[in-house]
Structure formats: structure tokens, C-alpha cells
Image (cartoon, rainbow, N blue to C red; front, side):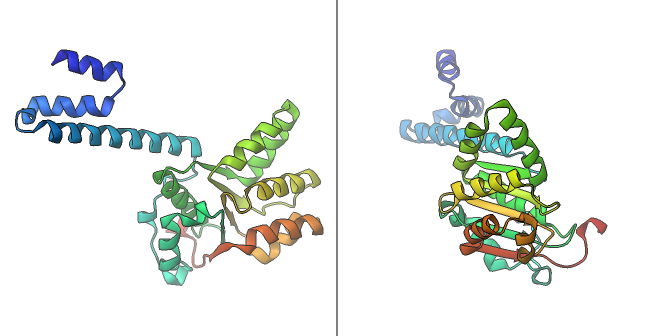
Length: 238
């Protein structure tokens, strides 16, 4: 028995190892046929690897909130349509490279909803990156000075779901306009983007600033998008 446990450890079959220990302690291994025991061990290993991948994706995403779809209160009076949230939870919008535009006043739950959708994507094995928009722009400025901007943009373009939170807090500088255009262009039709903003989408044109760039960005974002406009009293007061 010790030799089997040693081989599990050497092969890094941690799910199998834990389940094998349980079977030995409960003496269930004596009741199972070879096929039944093997199937049980393989299922345990698969579940262990899926959980580790999920934990790794969750950590790398660095969400603002630890939120899940199940925690969202689907209240139509707040602008949450159950059918749309259910559709987004399935995750097809990610594979289709579509965007989700979430707007609403401070404290109405935009960041929580964006985080919940990102959490769901991680559970489905998708790579997610979550950024406060202004912090992302500052990070890009530093990375450009360090000479690693090409690799960073390439990494962003390959992320299955990119979440940009708190968009529209300040007007964009010229380089920020170009950077946003490159990010959206790389993702258009390939990978999904969620943008959360206090400002209505119709005001984003002015925030971006340069007409030609704003037209190009908004055309790519709005053309195939889900629009969620949250309303109601600030949840932070509650």
C-alpha cells in the first residue's frame, strides 16, 4: 500500500492520493471492483485539477470583489433582467468575443456584477483579467517606459475576458486614447470585454475625446454587446 501512495506522490496525482487514503481508512477499497475503484480515483484526480485551475484563474484575475452569479439579486426594478444574466452565465458571449456594458450610479452594484461574471468565467476555465481603468492606464505608461508594452498588449489580447471597471472617471489623454483603441481592436470579435462605468454609454464619446478614435472604439464595443443599466438606491447604504 505504501508503494502505491509513494507513486501517487511522485506522479503528483494528489486527487487520487487523497481519495485512496479515504478508501483505505474506510476499507471501501475491498468492496469495489477494479473498474469501480479506478473510475473513482480518476474522477477524484480530474476534480482536483479542475479546482486547482479554478483557484489559479481566480487569483490571476484579481477581482475587486469575491462575487458569484448565485449572489446576484435578480431584481428587475434595479435593471437586472433574469434572462440576460442567465444567458451571460452560460458564457457564450466570451467565445463569440462580445462585450458587456454595465452602467449606473455609484454603489448600484456595477463592480459586483462585473466580478460575478468574471468569477463565472473562471469557473468555466476561461482566463480573466480585471482592472480599474485608470490603474490600467497608469500601468501601461510604466510598462511602456520599461520597454515591455508589446508583450503586455499581446497578453491582454489573449485573455478570454477583460474587465475594465470605473471607466470614464477622467477624460483620456492622447496616448490613452490610442492604447484603448489598440486593446479593443485586438479583442474585437475574438475575446470578450466587460466595461463598467458611472456614465451612460452615450457619454463615452466625449470621455474618449478624439472623434475618429472614439467612433472606432464605440463601434467595436456597441455593435455586438449586452447592455445593463443598473438603477436604484446605492447598495452601500444598505
